[in-house]
Image (tube, rainbow, N blue to C red; front, top):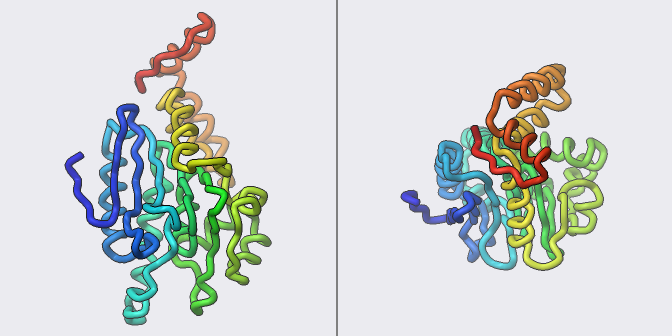
Length: 259
């Protein structure tokens, strides 16, 4: 891969699964300006690449996924810069959520503040047993600013989102799964668990995966059912649909081409 970064790593395997690692282990992978700049560029590359079929986001080391924003950097901001920083974070994380390939967060430790918001922007979250998630911004006299106040209620409900945000408390992996903040807890390696889940998705029709993501993202909107029907209808004209149905009838595994 031609891109070179200082604070993130990109690794794409032969099946097209890209692992994006936030690589500041000495700073608990905290989000600073450089990380956001490089995430922005990396997500553009991932979106435009025909070779990348799925994305796994994780953190370097064994302590943190992303332990939040870089507080030292935040503390140097002027009042006029704060809103811009929030809007930038929202834009970058929305770019992640808007990907039409599966995006899984492999939460390998602390996922706090901006780190929790990064995980929530992924389509699916798998946590290690030692993971801790939370939005502790109120303890700094702030609120979540990278989309957390909007995504958390969608995942856990408004009442639970208010409890967690207003208290700022951390949630262990078991509770996070119970309330719907994470989908699965890895028994051993969280990255391996994410790869296993991703590989099961890679066996499916890529056009169907894309349209499923688009349709589900319309849930809750008045246009959701219409979008579902349109996206459903689009797939009937694809080679993948013909291959999938033929393989089912012929009792064999399908070979999808994404066409």
